[in-house]
Image (cartoon, rainbow, N blue to C red; front, top):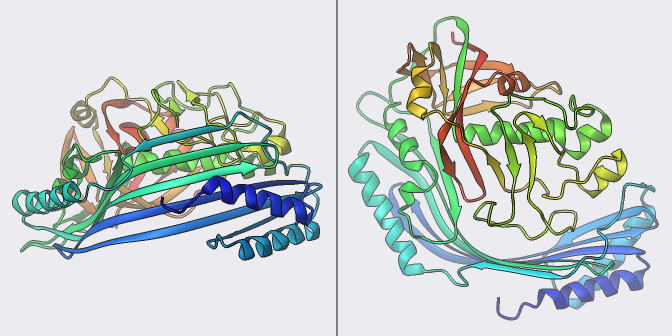
Length: 435
């Protein structure tokens, strides 16, 4: 981070905003340096390093808000942007929900490597390429990217808030499909983020399992007719569904507008008692990738959102809290951890009479009540406790609240993605249909 003084830039911005007439102001300043290695079309193909600067300013004149973002830290540009954002505030409507975080003790968090281990990155990427060629000769690596990103992020406001977070994170993402003499699978992808390269890349997340499954999906079969049955949801899809619930029922907009079906359900049972969802952005209990502060400028704290099916907290920011009168979420909704259960994944499959193992879900936005429908991708039919065939052209439909209320079991096994930890889940009552 040579030559970058985030706090100095933040102080300059706050001073410029004050001089322009802002009553309250917040700024975020960050610099990140990304070093990445790529596999394209099955070959090690690229090494590059890129630098990114980000600046965001928010000003309040009375309760009128202006916001602007950019990537230029020159004093001339910062002064010009400060004038623009305060002018935006003056031309905006008053909104009593607009505010900034109060004074808090300044804090710094730093974790991870300070520079990339390029030699180890190359070794791990080559090891991954050699492994896939040997273990899965029909697998085609479309694109794989291993990067190390060192970033410094500063949040400061006119109430005296000063937070600095520095991190060094390794990220790996792989996209692939399988092709043999019988056919071609649909593509799939996976990835994770960690603070070191101690584990082979195939063991990040459950990537090895997904690649193995993909090689068995070159010949798929459509489902004939439709039925209502069970669903076993894989961890990647669990993250998607959990995120959907947060967005539909627990965030600012659905609670402000009153569309959330959980708006009056705080401390009441809303889902199965087998479902517990934590938002733990801080160690030691939290995820490997930490967050020092929330998006609305508060020091982040760990919080359980749903405990044994009981709604313990929404994920409201400062704005949503002021507009609704409900508590602000101290975790900011980061670091999602779904508690694992007591059932082995293999036993979970054995307990399905007829249903689907959902690898990936592709669908539109669900209805406000949680109704959803879409295509089951990279998925399998389960019959009498056995995975019988990979599916094509198969639709699933249901209600997300009902699905998480009718949970039969949650797996002992869990997948650690670095920023989320998630098990498999077995539920029922899903409409599964083919041609």
